[in-house]
Length: 133
Image 1 (cartoon, one colour):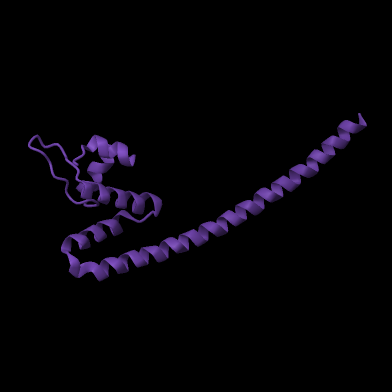
Image 2 (cartoon, helix red, strand yellow):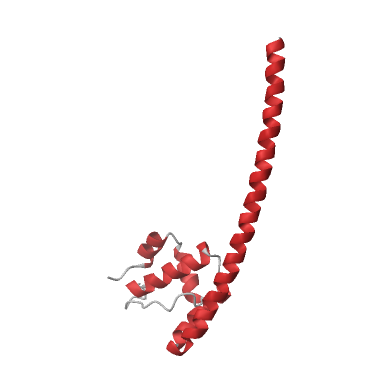
């Protein structure tokens, strides 16, 4: 089933400009067009859009890395190992960022807990003041 850019945009919650940009810079392979020049996305094209969206938005992979991956893919099966190595390296970097974010989250939780303790002490003081009136 072929889809228009409008349908793909809605399905993946990406703007049409973003889809055109991804195609222009090589993040997704060129999309076939009908006689009128309108893009017609195949199921395979949609899989690429989904993959790039996940890697770019969810995992935060740099555009340059994704362009390299797509370029390697287009070169064929002889690049399988290189593509795997690229993904493994990005996985390691993502894991490092996750660990850093966990530490940041712990620090924020600690800071919030301190504020809550301070506020509770102040509220007790306020309650005593109200009781004595």
